[in-house]
Image 1: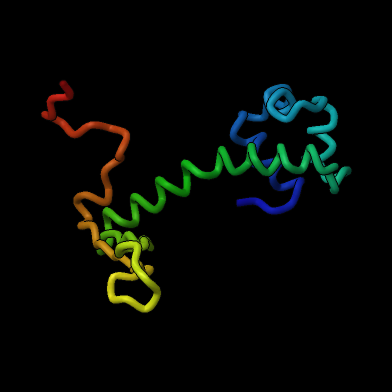
Image 2: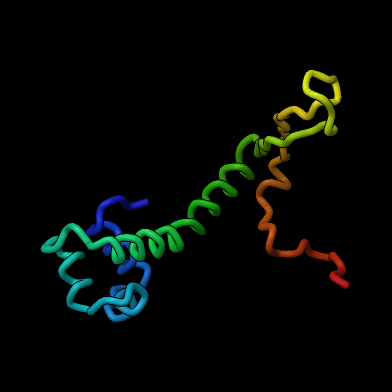
Length: 127
């Protein structure tokens, strides 16, 4: 994800096909301010603008990250999903039933890893 304010503004402008009005409306600033940051004349946004800029940049950046990971997982060796969970029962400390943190790892085959979880599979009845 772009780190500097100018790079973030240029990234948002590229996504908006160069429309400074669209970027300005998303961030709640003027079109001219967007142009100044993109050109490099302004460099350090105030806190509110910095937070909005980072949020909007992350919102546009994330789908590309997910698509790249999905593509790599489907063309490579699959995907490894890892989660931590606490298993056990409420018991006295030191008891064998005392809950413990466990690490669970599950591999997903390349066939399943490449699927978009938001799209249903073909031939599947959704009733």
